Image 1 (cartoon, one colour):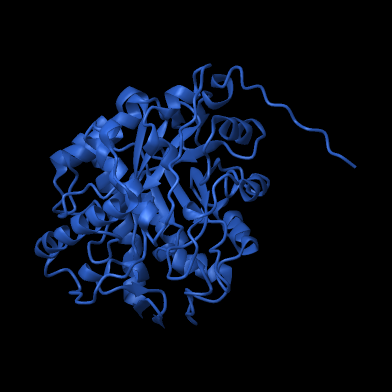
Image 2 (cartoon, rainbow, N blue to C red):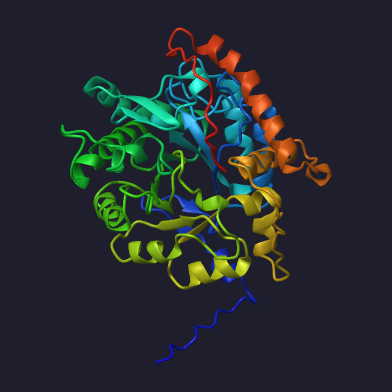
Length: 423
């Protein structure tokens, strides 16, 4: 039997995407569009914010977005995702951080750092990676964390969240997706512990819950805390959708204010969702729709949103409360303004004849640099040139990172892997 086709009214997108969203903590986001987390690689190599970074997030705020997320912000400089990450620590340049927080909140926008820890995926030239369990597979080796290492984590996240709040950011997101540390704890493929932090999904979630509790105690009841989780690791033996749904059921009992649904990992051999075939629509919408049935916490889906029609349909159908957009907003920083107007307008995505590992990621990262310099109209880099510039910039920052954070760093002498990072 043919199911009736639901018709959506796109003549007044503001009535759908422009509706405010009240979070459980009482904070109100002014519309339903989020610039989701991307590793912008615009830090100064010493963990500090820069003028270019502040300008980048200011542009998205000027474009009308309700919320922007700063990807891969570290509370522990020993385990960064890249040397362009921000670090929220005792020696952070507070003046630069406050400027970033203020400018990214222009026109009523919210700007939240995504609190992360790369764990087994820590950048090799400036780290000795540690994960839930020791691993020795092709392209990825790491030591296993001790109980003492794990017990330090809630305090690290809580201190970072406190610094973010004091600097003027509107909230924080805890990163438990994409194969980074907390995602590694949730995955049975990479968490092989036999103590209280491994085994059942409840035990694998334990450290995530402890981090949430510590952050909440640090920031109070009225400060938004979001979390990003995988719907699936997209790896044989990794986190499955059924286990991810159990994670959501556990999260429903916490003080989380927004659940961001994504998926995939950056482990060697894994296929990144963002580099998959285009034209298939939002990646995780069906899972998000099922999530809405088991939690009262607002839900956002991130990945694959390329058109206004997709965003309107996702919100109006009740599948999600918010839409997370990354690369489309890298192509047009004023996308929110356009999607809330009657005229609309969708970005034109580039097509690449070849796609070496990490190449598309590098291209979009360099596109963010162009946005931060207000010269995106002159951005003409090919994929190969973008990769070369991206890798050269990161390599140049590694010495600055080591010099800044020594002796706290675990000195790393291995060569960098070809693993991509986000966006």
